[in-house]
Image (cartoon, rainbow, N blue to C red; front, side):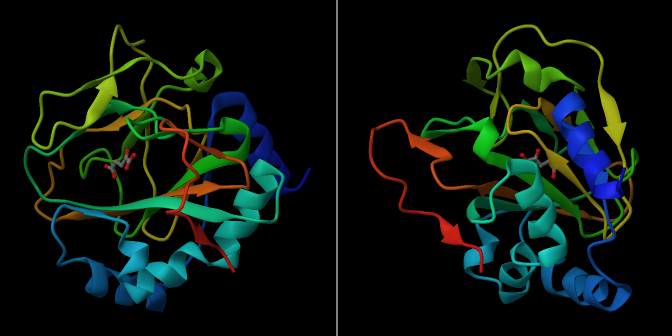
Length: 218
Ligand SMILES: O=C(O)CCC(=O)C(=O)O
């Protein structure tokens, strides 16, 4: 079985799979320079930062996404650039495919998380709950944290697995996979890019409107 088939199978079974490298050293260095000076959370940087617009279109990434969702037509629903500074900042347990505005069809969407700088247990890499996507979307509540991000309402299983990623590597995750990231205990910022990809029909807006905020992958 090819590496990419294995990844697709793993993705279906446990809800995530590591992949990479998606960038060589030269691209990585220029990304670290271009993205390292932003505020801790930047929403939809693919709309304003040319290097991120290029990244979401990289065929090494979009081919894998197409394989996992079974469709060659892809759109970006949202991106988050998280430059996690040393200190307290953490991202609480959540699922990427559900928020107050919309719900993503897990068969027609997924998340790609890219390590722009090394993501280790020390720097605050993603932690996932393997297989949690099989339980579907869970009720949500606002977390009692700065910015009040959405978190899971109710008890959580205690089977977290840390998923370190070298800079230039990444992770593909089911839209329902429960994940979080702890604080960065290193002296340097940890830079990661979260990309939500959807295939046609993958977005349901809660107010019944058509999604008009998607960016086509070319
Ligand atoms: O980059 C991180 O630490 C967490 C990102 C994440 O979970 C998200 O954007 O959904």
